Length: 156
Image (cartoon, rainbow, N blue to C red; front, side):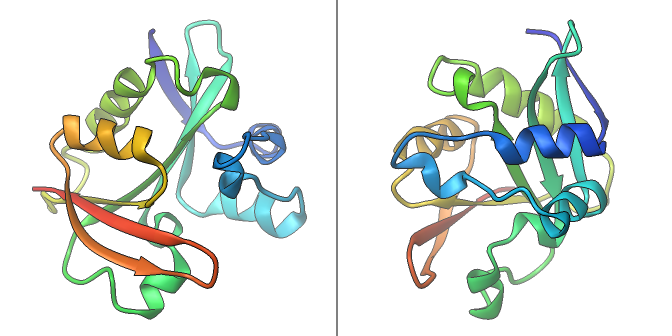
């Protein structure tokens, strides 16, 4: 799969916000509203497309990649590049995660002086946790929001 990142547009943002994941991954479903569209367009997000220019995912960095409950509980200490990412629901669980996440990490390497990556994943998402461990991430912290348990993972 040949991938490329592009500037997040309104069309990409609306498409992403309309993605619907089956349970238990429905935690990642979003609402299409101006606030969410603006977050995707101006919150450090990039669209990821394949060679046919079809949208297959996105990634973000910085505060947009952090879970607010974790930020409030001090779960993001020190300097790290926080990463958030998502793939089109129809292609998740089909072995594309490794290629997709490798692409994202290569995009981010060398952009900053910080040499540690950090991400937050829902504790139930064993599929993603297994991928992140395979890619050299290790579990660092656990925290809960009002509705879910999360894990932060780091790669130094």
